[in-house]
Every structure is written in structure tokens, then in C-alpha cells.
Length: 264
Ligand SMILES: [Ca+2]
Image (tube, rainbow, N blue to C red; front, side, top):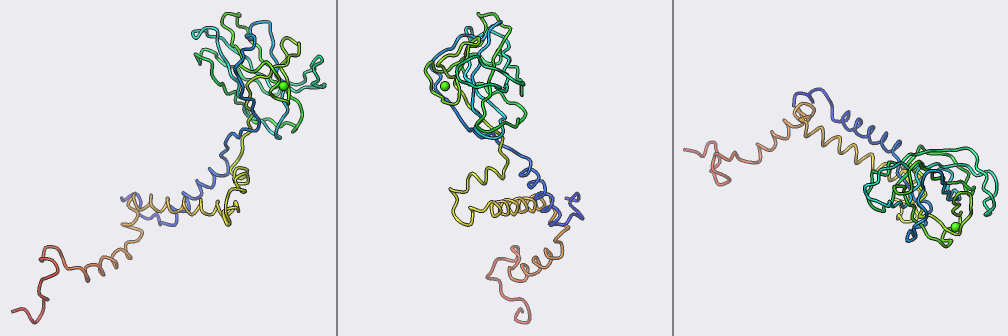
């Protein structure tokens, strides 16, 4: 209790609201921009000396995560799959693909999962050109008996790109999820069509959020014993008025005769 002595309630409210505002300003959530969710077909394992490329069209101006469906020939197999996001220089028309700079690279320990499952390749947000073509390039040093097996579909089910195996174009598409990180502002903007007035204004939501945070700060302050010191005068007044209206319990409840001259 004594720790809260000298800390006024408004300071606790401002502190908690400030922490909440910083969180709101810096936090981000992955937003799914494009997906190809058919994964019933197994593509050839990505083993040493082989390369599997899925071209994609950037749905937004950034990317931060790509999900793929991966299986293994043996659940105990423990290998490493290299994921790269690479620029595509030339056209993606099924002829030889010309790759540019590698933008992001993630290594996946395939011992981290046992069965066919969705694996998220998360990377530092990268700026891309919306509508431009990029390549997801998968390689590995694993022998074929332990190499990861990407899931997808053998017939074109995603019109933003195609699968190339060792440079040869196919009709296949990988199971895909393409994400970007969105801040609170963008998420509030996205929610706008579903919110009634005045909640369709992001600023109103933010004000409500900060009022809620400040209230929480006040509650914390009360729980920590702030009331003893910070509102001592008001507390005393309230206690004074309470004792004037409610008779003390030990004197027998409300039916006691009034004290004063009428008592014998
Ligand atoms: Ca396709």
C-alpha cells in the first residue's frame, strides 16, 4: 500500500494509457492477402541438387510471411529446407525463368514437424511492387529419403503464377498463403465497412481504447492501495457521511431508540 503513496490517480491513468498507445502504435498482425488452399497432390521432394519454384504475384506492397504445406517421407526425418523469396526479372510465361535478387531467406528444420502440415515462413517485412511477379524458391541438401514434400495441386488453381521444377514449367500450383503485417491503423481501416456510426471512425475507436486503458490504470492504482493516500480527504468525507446515516452494527441495528434527552 505504501508504495502507492504520493502517486496520484491521474498519473497511473496516464501511464497505462501511454503504454497502451505505444502498444497500439507499434503492434502488427499478419493479414492473409492471397491463398491457394488445395493441397491434395504431392509434388516431388525438394532434395539435394533439385529446385522447386512457385511464382507468385504480389497482392500488396509488402510481404512478411508465406505459408506452404509440407510433408515428409518419414516422420522421423530430420533435414533442412531453404526457402527464398526472389525477384523475377523476365516474364513469367512458362519459358526459362530469369531470377534477380534474393529478397529474403528462411531455413526450416524439417525435424520440427512430423506429419504433413502447414509451415509458416516468416521474415522481415519486404517492400514489393503490387502485381509484380516474385519467386518462392525451395532447395535443400537432404537426400531424397528424408527431403520435404510440398503439397499443392497438379492443375492450375492459382492464376498469379506456376510451379517450375528444375527449370521446367508445370501446370501445378503449391498450397499457398501470402501475408503482410498490418498495423492497428490499417486494421481499423479494413473494419470500417462493418462498423456502425460513430465506430466507423478509427479515431473514435482509439479514443474508446485509451479511455478503457486509463480506466484500467485507475483500477490498478486502486488495487495497489492508491486510494489510501491519493483520495484520503475525499475518503474521510465519505466515511463521515456514511457513519452519519448508518447506525453502528454493534448498537443493535436500526430499531435502537434515539440517543439524547429522551433516554432515561
Ligand atoms: Ca497457376
